[in-house]
View 1 (cartoon, rainbow, N blue to C red):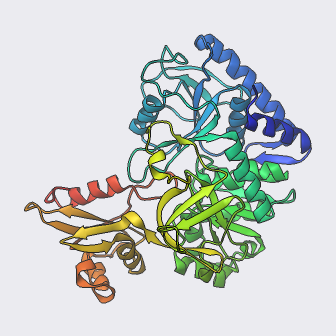
View 2 (view 1 turned 90 degrees about the horizontal axis):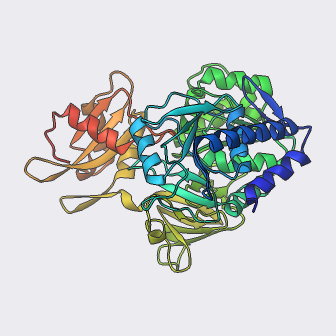
View 3 (view 1 turned 180 degrees about the vertical axis):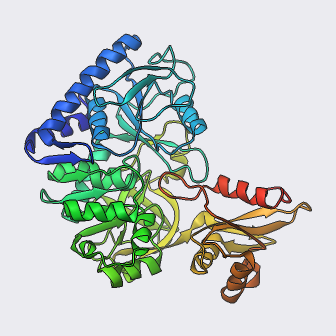
Length: 493
């Protein structure tokens, strides 16, 4: 039986046939041309898969590990047509992390645009130019320890993995379709829109706002690859005159490092940022220097897009709930506390972590986000993380509050956590990245001016860069490793 997404894409590619669908620096495809290219990919994949392994009844589970491009869309739609189950994975993951996903999720094959170092054998290539790699001689054959996705699952995406291994979220086709419909309708996305998307399609920011939503509207999706340097962003702004810009905070911060005016920014109807909130100073400078108001998209990987504000401003928080989204707070009787959400675009469960997703649902199906916030005048305002409180000597310290002060004191990025001294006593620590000349003494001094003394990190390690996930979130494990290396392992955790 055809999946929901395959049918939706098939209908849309016919409906908008002559309009530009997707483009990158190498390739432009109308909706009709995308239809043809996806059909060719499906044919090539079917041939390759039937030669590689006896398929039986199993849906092949296929990771897409590639940078943004028109070919990415071709492969994604082609896999849906082939009846495969696409897994959209961050191409910035380390080989060991890719290996873990392949093993934990029972992956059969990988579609990729780069060499793989995961000990699996290449065997063939797709018409889009991607390599096709099967993961094991017995790919496609069920085993006792291979997790079985739900029958309704049509695509799998992953949590960011900023605090551990990525969890694989199963989504039904209906949930993905609902997310795109609500975004299109709530944001006024139309056929004349041109979306310039620098966020990876594996991430919810791009997947929910710039992929199926664009095609539902008959809009054009532009997908530059590579790092979004200010020069590259400006070049695309001038060449295609986009109406919408999608990117992570680093993109907007890079634009502010350019001294010259960028008048094209003021022409944007919608600018989206996510993964981490845009710094208030960055948002204000973009507004005053370039006339650009950036919307802090709020969505949770497991629940889809949740809010939007057509007139973003600091006092508006994250905006109003999208259609199909319900919030409850704390114990459910007020409008402040830990945020729980129920949406029509929610994932179903974690494929590689049985029971973990369900454990965060209450009896009414609301998902515990671990974010703290409130609803004021119909708009959502975030105030921190429920799990961000550290216990240091009996005192509760909010790591988000400390991080905010470090960022305001000159750090580009900061990670705050607890470590144990050799005598077992806990200690507040931080790893920050920043410009040359930024020192531990200066940062601790600024913290002492703005925080109670017990909230000031006892040790601050300054490094040039903190490794991040593919969506720009700092990796906690990497920050801890940098800390222990800099302090000669004088602490135990």
